[in-house]
Length: 243
Ligand code: CA
Image (cartoon, rainbow, N blue to C red; front, side, top):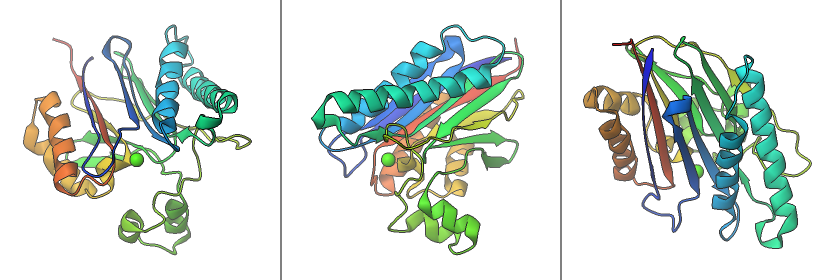
């Protein structure tokens, strides 16, 4: 199987800075999105450390890719905690991290902490593969909040899991969804989904067809046209049969 990668990150319409980070390493089958948070410039420091540590720790992957990716996420957490402890200006910074690694045999591994998301578009369906580590998601699963209300809830940005928060045990979600020719994976920060329900994302994906780069830009444009309330980051990975 061959893979095409594309991605785009944008500050959005209301924020002064872009604290998201995007990692695309097609030759290594790796893509990641991180959404940083913190005062001053700390959010972009946290998201940058997360993708840098992930990059660094996954150069020579052994047979147990899932375990090594999860370990890389834990190393990123430790690196952010350490950096925050060394500089008062960076105290309290944190980040989400959602990463995908694909290989030509059809293996796909996703590791995830926070409220960025991974989806797989297959056939006519867009399936969310990650679970949002948020207060509102807990309420949805408890049956006290509808999914529609959760998306626009004033507490929708409260995370129950993030990298960099000292003394907080992180729970790394690992998903191994498999991969077939024709599948397209989408990783995104919450700025894409804040105003765009899944059916509108699917409409943009369908509309753009084969041009993956144009599709990534079109998704960002759609989020901006819907108000662009936050930084928007999109990574797309499409699987195709060889030759
Ligand atoms: Ca965000």
